[in-house]
Length: 215
Ligand code: TMP
Image (cartoon, rainbow, N blue to C red; front, top):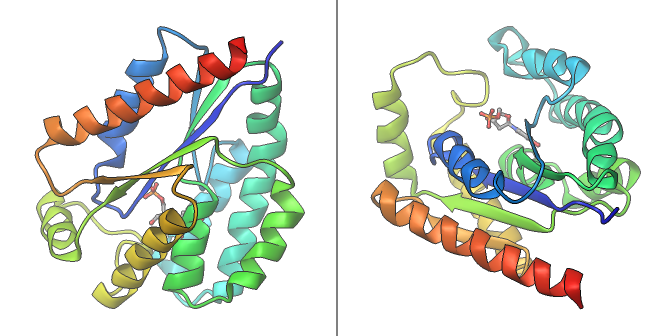
């Protein structure tokens, strides 16, 4: 059976990931068997680690500890869910993956990219997303959206304005370095326009993928 495809969705909290995961799912489900998952999380153990990462009581966690917890959750996720699903020919849609680590732990927390690359090489081997959609949001808009959401902020969401500005720049650098894979969508626009762009990116990707498969 042909190997499935791996699609990831990235962006700052407040960029509209949750509702756009729903859109991508709707676009793909009629054509492929799709598994939707998220990071940190995706397995029972990974969801437990997610709890540790998001809790305020762990506010003083060292950045390297944070990276290693994320890596432990990701290793479980890759070995137990993502790779088996792709090998069975399923498509996998994941809410965040390694780009988030370079953006949050690298640019945000200040870990050296080489440290992250070592962990990436250890657990990810040759697995790379085939397509990544990055929802890009200016900081002022993110702030007002988060305020209007009104729910309690987790350990990451309560970081400073400067932290998120660095994370945003980190994401944009990842996109600049790999424009073939990472497609940037301006999330600072009405939802229907954002979704038109996402639909067009997914449509083009599927057409290209079919052409490659049928070659
Ligand atoms: P979520 O809000 O998208 O569910 O993700 C939970 C938080 O985890 C989010 O604030 C970003 C953070 N995170 C990292 O810092 N590094 C990572 O590699 C991943 C996957 C998430």
